[in-house]
Length: 101
Image (cartoon, rainbow, N blue to C red; front, side, top):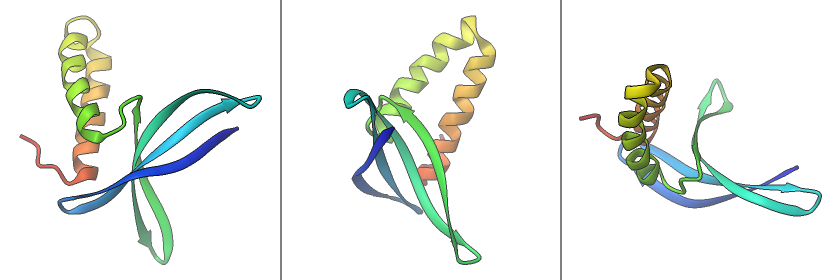
């Protein structure tokens, strides 16, 4: 069972997101932590969430920096993976309200 705790509330232009830290535990032993960028909002009175999995990157900025380099490497050898990661980058930028350049 995974244990969830929230950290690093940060306000971005145009959107409020927070970083959720998920500690992976099995049989009482911690195996690691992964991070998610989360934006909560309401639709017809119900809470909805947009989530982008950041993996081991604890901030959106760290993820974007690492992923930009990774996309360049993947484009040469695994173009389909590069396109998937590029789509994830664009989704994270949209979620955090960052302008694409």
